[in-house]
Image 1 (cartoon, one colour):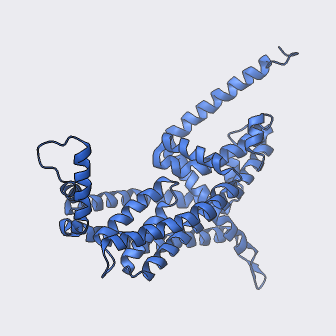
Image 2 (cartoon, rainbow, N blue to C red):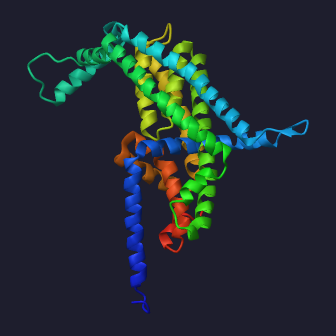
Image 3 (cartoon, one colour):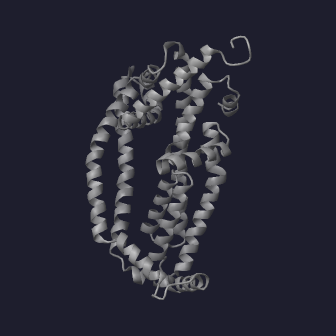
Amino acid sequence: MSGGKGISVEAFLRGVVVLLVTAAVGALLWYFRDVVLYILISAVLAILGRPLVSLMCRVEVKGYTLPRWAAAALTLVLMWLAIGALLSIIVPLVAGKVYELSSLDLRSALSGVQEPLERLQNYIATIFVMPETHFSISEVIVSTLRQILNYDTVNSVVSSIIDTGMSAVIVLFSVSFITFFFLKEDGLFTSMISALFPERYGENVNNAIGKVSKLLTRYFMGLVTESLIIAAIIAVVLLLFGMSSADACFIAVIMGMLNVIPYAGPAIGVLVSVFIGIVSPIEGCTIAYTLGVILSTICVVKGIDDFILQPTIYSSRVSAHPLEIFIVILMAGSVGGVVGLLVAVPSYTVVRVFAKEFFSEVSLVRKLTKEI
């Protein structure tokens, strides 16, 4: 078969070996997935912090430049301070709103939508055969929300958060330790990845990692910028319409945070925002008016996001077609749920870059990676 158009025996065996090795490496990585997750988080933080480290190392003060280890340590401290400052704003806001909802008289809060719920119930009764026992949509909603928003549930959530916080200390230390060395030794992560490949592929690996770092830096920076813009616009508009600062900021934070989850996140954010509008309407206004303001604001902002911000971030920043990204996100969501949605675009970016470096002779790979 070596002289014809078919695949040679040597190429076939090489392909089988590559598949077996890839499967073995994948199984090993899955077994140590917690450690791999720490390394990946550290790699992302290092990608985001590397420009600041380089800037600090270039600055001269009276002929003295900051050592790279000191620049790395200072950058890491600044990153954690920024994250801590963000959490110090978000956590009290969310915790206060949860506590407020847990002590809320749900029956009184939902009285404003009692009439629409009764019309909905009557409409359902005309379509479906309802049991003789009394059924009330509003009672079902109230009982369900009471099960969710009660002191026992809140205490359980708080206890769970405390337990998670204790585990997070270990994660924080591990990620900080790894990130410091990734920042201090610029080629360390590249060397770790290169060690997984034969030496003859060293140049390909270095090229792939360089492109991945560039694309993911653009992607993550764009994602953070997108969430901040969305949260800021929503907060300002809701405040202009008279909503209380606590409710406006809460909705803005929820929409901004959940927006990082493609498609599913904004939908969940809308449901939470609608619920806040029902139980905490704008002072002096009806629930219908409040919901109209919230939904109109979110629709306009999401329109800006979908047609202006997201095409820039999810496609051009990772050099992929929007339809291509959409299909990848759907596949990742069906396989990995919410986590799959979160890692879909970064993972696909890594796969495309490495595929171009190692399988550029395949026509499908050339078509999918021609923009890289």
